[in-house]
Length: 262
Image (tube, rainbow, N blue to C red; front, side, top):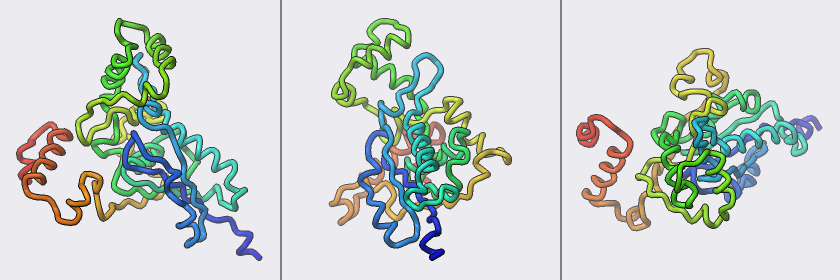
């Protein structure tokens, strides 16, 4: 009948938590799909240094994780009909870092026409951790630890050195990054992210304004900062103050004491 022949809306889930770890494959889309008339898609994309290592030559390119998401959206446009999905009715949903990624794609010419609306939960391109503002600094430190920046080199020499390292060598490096900040993540590269997100979203004719958007928060924000004991019995005042001071010190540059008291 006509109902069986109708194509279903498509929901694309982008996982959150971090730009360094997690995977779409651990989220079972069949649970949501079984309760609704939609096709649910979860994707994996490169993370950490493999997904967001920037150029050291000033071109600032390094948004490979975002480009993986764009590639997945292209695949959906070309193939989702085989799963009875409607490529003209694609919604992206994500939380935390996943929501920020969706916001970046809403601003990107590379993703134009690949999805039509977005649901962003507890994150956006304006979140203080969304952009890896010190990515070049951390990339040089990373290369130095692996012995690829011992002497001044051309960028191609550094990259060639890194390519000869094993995956185990690369993943074993533990950079000391301040809490709440990002070492390797999306950067303004002029291509995937054309310009400062705040500036792009402020324009009435921007790509951002062409999408329907639902924005919300979750009930248990930053739950991963707390232990099972904390969840059951709460935290004492001194620990609460330490958490707040760390957050304010690492995310803000001005009026720190006023922000803490507030």
